[in-house]
Amino acid sequence: MLRDPVGGEVFPAVFSALSSEFDPSALSAIFASHQDHDIRSSLALWLEFNPKMRCYLSWLWGSFIPHFGGTAETFVTLPDEGADIALDGLSLRAVPAHYLYS
Image 1 (tube, rainbow, N blue to C red):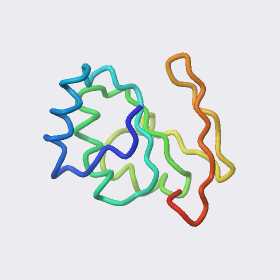
Image 2: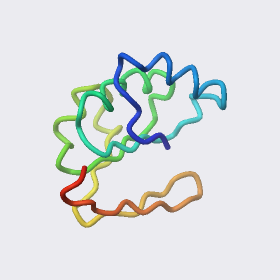
Image 3: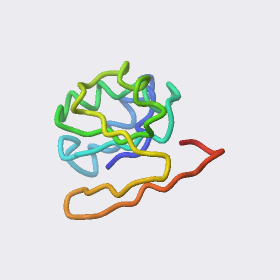
Image 4: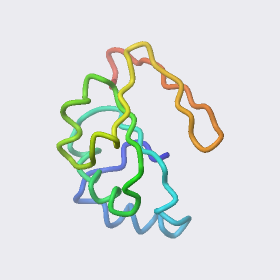
């Protein structure tokens, strides 16, 4: 899972650095902490390498972030109280951080 995968303008540098560590097509999920363009506008570029990747995000941003790319199946919205995320044999817990980013 990649958290807040950067804006499109720095995507090439981040992608290159990540690729030196492992195959980017192995990424199975993105976690979007909030909607800002500086952390979200590269979504379509990441999805080029794995169109089946899921993007976990607060329900609050569920109608906004899809404008950056993906399909209805890409997005998994999380309720305000948080939720468990099953990821490749791990169980991650998304917890609310009200008054911070969602």
